[in-house]
Length: 87
Length: 256
Image 1 (cartoon, chains in turn blue, brown):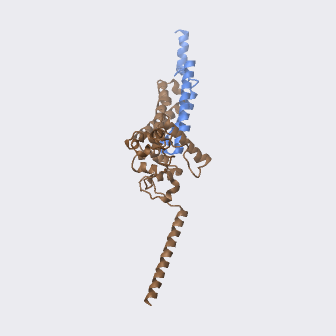
Image 2 (cartoon, rainbow over the protein chains, first blue to last red):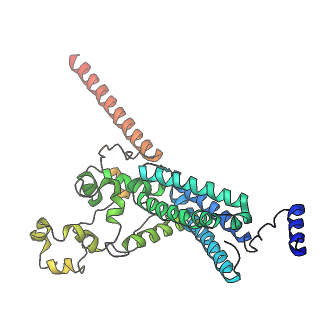
């Protein structure tokens, strides 16, 4: 057997196939999801019990949080495209 | 403040979408960075972090805006309750009462119909005015006498009445003092000119009777007013008793 191939087979048997590298910018995804969850919570509040207070909370708090989350997601896509990482 | 519960089918659909979006976001948080390298992860991330939240945000905002235009929403602030009660004044002079009771405006959107400018950004301006109301409610304090922020524009009246035959052919709308053209151009105010000056009349509630309507409570007299009324009743009763006694005495004297 070709010694290089033999080494590769040995490595695969002993350690398993190499896991694909995790995107270094993927931490942004958790931030984006967290912000959007908070925004959705405020929106749910306004939908369930609409008062002037909950409406303003949604308009001035929930909507910007959702927008910020979406913005972070685009930032993640932008950085991923630049570095050529997966997904 | 009273709150408006979720009334419409659309509202329930938006809420269901919102729950799905929230569940997906929780999944993204739990799976975290691993999703970025999984098969189909990119599509899931796009749906969870952009498509669904964008749909829920746009539809939820539209729904909330629509519901915030309702009479019920405006009257959910206690400061506005007297203005709501002015809609059921049993008199044909106060303009809001005449419009509400005769269904000249949609009763579900009575406040919004008259207090929104019929311009491209009239609705936006009305919402910004609403923010100012919140500022007074929470920060500056509500003034004893609530006044309209700017002179009421004829344009709001004319958006309905402007082309109406009853308006155009009325002799009162084309006088030497107030020619029709000046009214149409807003130079002669419908309200401030003294022709239609009685509006919400919240300071004169004692002078009016009220029409009963299921959605608006009839004003209750304050303690001071009730005491005054009770004193008046007591005085009237004592006068009546005194008169009765004097009548009896006179009758006895006459019989003697």
